[in-house]
Image 1 (tube, rainbow, N blue to C red):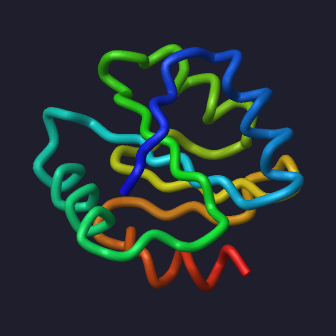
Image 2 (image 1 turned 45 degrees about the horizontal axis):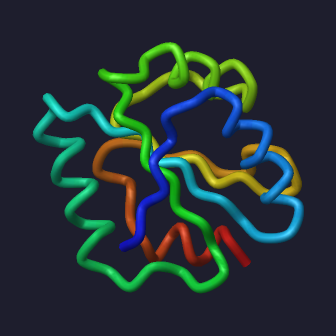
Image 3 (image 1 turned 90 degrees about the vertical axis):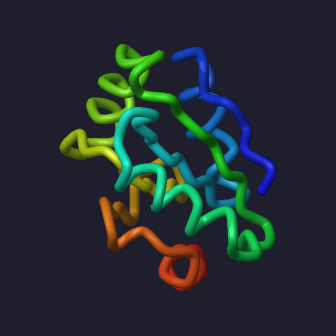
Length: 109
């Protein structure tokens, strides 16, 4: 898995623009949460979906960006959380044990 670190709120504009050409996943991860670690490990064990960019957000370190993600994409903040962004909008979101690569792949089509 080649994560792209989400460390600056300006990247959200880039993500929104990029999603008009290819789906983008944002994985919001709490480094203190065992469920979040399990979800991250589960994603990393699977083959990433082709033609999808995967962004990683350490929400403890970058909580203001996490809040902005929730606001801009109209989702309730959760951790761990996966958002699929297509055509500038969040078209799918999942949390906790529901996070898996197969569902991301199905939703990215």
